[in-house]
Image (tube, rainbow, N blue to C red):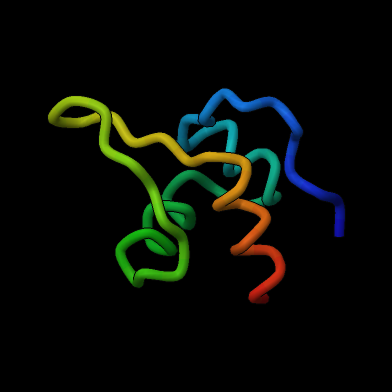
Amino acid sequence: MKPAPTTARPMNLKEAADFLGVTDRTVRNYIAQGRLKAHRVGPKLLRITPDELNRFLEGT
């Protein structure tokens, strides 16, 4: 497994999906299931921090 990017900038769903090698719909499902934590920015936008991606990858 490769570590998440070291940038402090939170990623959008597409960037996180590309990193994980899955679709953005799968990332949404992970969030809905509580497996991956995302932060809401405004009423519609979700962002995922690199730290959260690392926690997710360590748990799988």
